[in-house]
Length: 180
Image 1 (cartoon, rainbow, N blue to C red):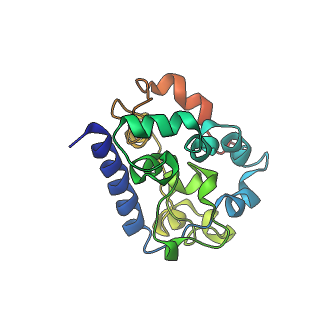
Image 2 (cartoon, helix red, strand yellow; image 1 turned 120 degrees about the vertical axis):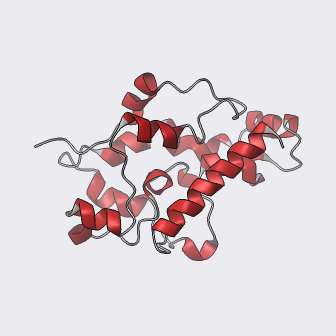
Image 3 (tube, helix red, strand yellow; image 1 turned 90 degrees about the vertical axis):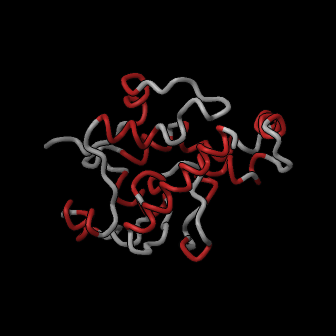
């Protein structure tokens, strides 16, 4: 089994586990998250994501360079059609788990890390962290937990990844709610 296949399987496993913990929540998409997470009070989280490479992850698969990498890896499909590529470049889920507002082209989006959002998307749930987590919101409070999630895709098994360096990479995507 190739290293690339192993990383795709790990990404899939994380997806399955997050799906199970979210009690069949559906993926609501970035436009739903944006409504509340683009304010100063919330730390402009949506803006941080939209300016990041995560928001462009899917579009990378549409390039000739990505197709060349997929061919070199032995895949017979274009990168954007290859499950092993899609597993780290967007959310891949059964269509019945995708809300009409969800767009696969949004790449590595909020719910890629925080789990399907239908169960915790409303204001009343989000105002209570414990209630939000119980409803399926996945949170990562320390470097070890964040790194463990990041390296499911950012690792030596990815054909273009460099060594993941938390101290260098996390500040580029960090999006905690500011302390009051």
